[in-house]
Length: 465
Image (tube, rainbow, N blue to C red; front, side, top):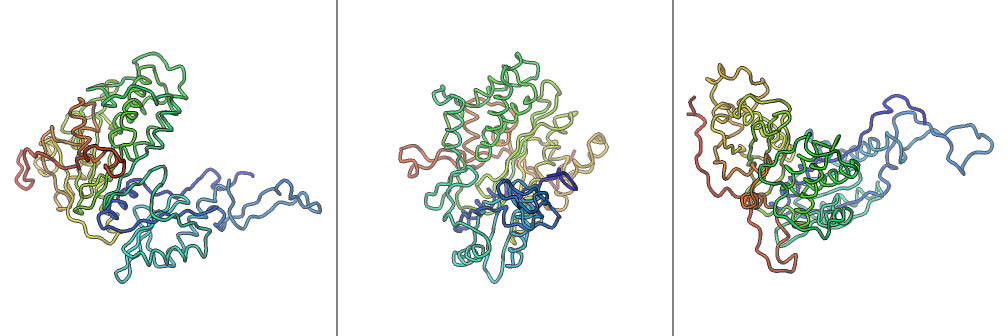
């Protein structure tokens, strides 16, 4: 096949992992059934809008016209246009059935009519369907089956490498099988377990250690660990640190990776536990000022709950150097506010009302900076887009509250912690092994995320410099 227009462009319809977790949390909170569908030979269902030609396949060459080529009417596997063509045909059919496509996540479709509410997620050829009517879900599956070769896999149990287990109204998401395969591949099944993935206050540098003799192995293992963070937020900071040295890993970096594997060995069946609860968004935001020893960039992190269920989180090095801890914290507040705004937009697509979300921060100066315009003369060095969070607060679309550093859950995403404090914060993330009835052994149920102590709450309307 010869290259032509748009030959280098590839499009594959995938739903964001945060959207998946939010929909699952919503379904658990409202006690909706969740069905899983699989499309056979999905890319063969799409029709092509472009003129695409291919050589006659071996064994099927026309003896009378051996030099002729085939003009494709429908997509085939290996064709760059195939994913887009499949997604276009599937989405067009859903729109004909009355679904609306989300403007925030193009792989999310919502149906709402006369009290019937359905949500459909698509990840290439894997589909999740939930809603308040089992009968209408069954009808939709039959309609989809008339046009596409589709298999109904029943209630959700295994999706994108994530195992789903149920206990009463609770749902446990884990990647235990994926973890065991990774440990077996790296010969860490018999490794000595450890209680934390990162030593307390460890800072990795690009200049520590000798060059690693097998950088491809390093990249392969780190990439596998990165996929594990889909259900393991407690690994986010540790994995983010080792990901920064993929281009030139050293023996010190490989030692850090082996420590993560030892921690994963000790917690191989841990995952997210979802339960019904209140429907509101709560976020925790924190930053480690100038934490990078090489560039002095800060490391920021946030975690966002829907009720008591963790749906979104991040641990990331800031792009620029901050001149103060207040600036680093304020930059992270803006990043957290942007993620909250995106989640609120998803709820608008869900046709659901959401109360004003709250961000908990442990830096009083950054909270005051977000609400007090008097600070303008002292913060000219701040980028204009940082003040995005200030606009949200003034409009009443966001609330900022103070929380003491000891209870700051997002601290887990910015630095290495002691074993005792690490376990305390992980319990607030609702990351734990499956409930007792799912495992068959006797261990205490996990503690769900709650803020045990709030040292102070700042009144934003009366904050003064």
